[in-house]
Length: 246
Ligand code: NAP
Image 1 (tube, rainbow, N blue to C red):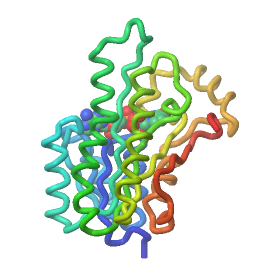
Image 2: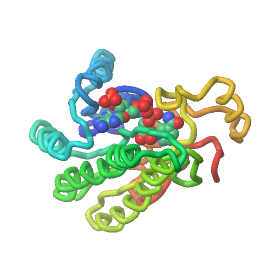
Image 3: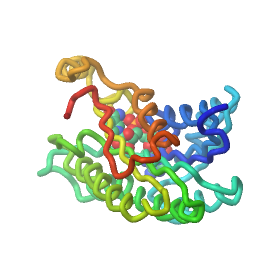
Image 4: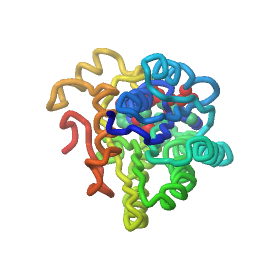
């Protein structure tokens, strides 16, 4: 028996990195996972989960497209009859120092990292409220908590997610829907591949636990917040950052 047996989960940004690890984690404990990314990008994640005996389907959607996100939730509920776990993980960076940052860099990051969470939660809340149960987890960042030069757009989007989730947590708590945030530190994924190995070593030296995070470290925290054991936790920010920010 897995702790997520019978549960239906949607994970955005599940094609790689942290989102893929989250999808794999939930599926390994019995959830049926709808793995979302653009085009056919999440196909491999769903195939790997299925090959390992888990339950997953790939769903092609751009999270900045409201109609696609609404269809994602509608089709998931039509197909599986319910929605238990919603993980808003898809995210991008468009780093630039403020004076050189283009308006489009700002708009794209806010649309993908923050507005998409609004759209996804608005659609996903309806079935959860009907069920009087649900788990929403949004992936923020240590950068939303402490700032980072060259990431004014990203920091704003990630700090915005924290405020958004706290407000939503208060709004839906009476329906037993919890809304929490996981704020990763520096995690080794495609997103951080532009950082040179020597810069990663320098960063690691400043992280109390002495290493970068892995996607599995983040997935473990999401798995906990999505579980029944976390039923009395809502509106919280769980930092998974090796002590980088306390
Ligand atoms: P990643 O390896 O670059 O993966 C990003 C994921 O987001 C991909 O699956 C990508 O799917 C998806 N995505 C991006 N834009 C999308 C869109 N418009 N529609 C649908 N899917 C979209 O990044 P990651 O490091 O795993 O990051 C995952 C989350 O963790 C992000 O929110 C990120 O901000 C956050 N985070 C990461 C770190 C870190 O150090 N890596 C630290 C703190 C927080 P496609 O295949 O469609 O591109």
